[in-house]
Length: 301
Image (cartoon, rainbow, N blue to C red; front, side, top):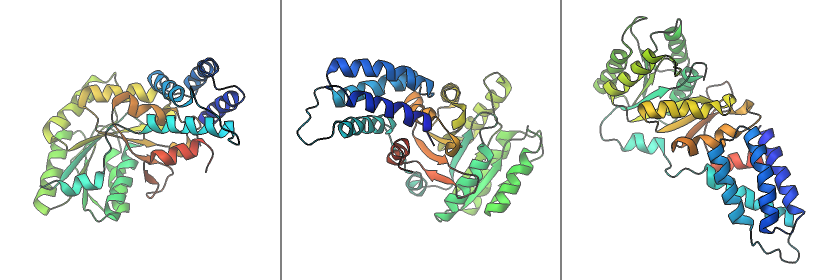
């Protein structure tokens, strides 16, 4: 996991550890690191911030007798990565749901085609149920052939009900009915599955805006494929411009050899990573922890 990012940061640590850790030496190594991080799909803005934070940590660092220079450099890089990963605002989803005065808590999911959105919704439904909450899913992807059947099968497996209409129905109407169903029965959470979009399909993007306008969700979550690399940043920005993203779930992080998407996305749109997908099973949705991510980068599997 994150082999490319580990390789690039490890190379930087080794290079600086062989110098006097002067500003000149650090600047030269950071120039090389910038190019290497861009190759690892880290967005330019995140690279710039990471460089500044590494420089702050290292320049002027005094090496005392008995201290290992490599450890000093590695600790500085770790701290810098952790700072970049830590969002300005953190979200405790369970606390948000439980503290809302009126049920249900409504979450709308958006994302590009093929990001694993529907499977992720089922995983989150499973996680919410394990934490003692009741859930209903709105099958608001009424455009893609087989989409309703897919979400219905997932819902059956994780033991939650879905609200559905026929294919071609108004997605916003499906979501509205799911919310009314949940309100009438005291259900805690409504998860709205929407059709996968891309920036060229104006009709679907307009439909997504309509769903959000009609349902007024408590949270909009962007589901992105970590394997998309830097492309995921532009995707997230497009959705953020359209409906304002509150949180991110990254899928397929277990297969991500680069790690750049996770390091970049919160920085790009100002929304925290809430969960990461680390496998195919319903239990393979992990609340995101910045320190866990840093440990993975530095090889502590």
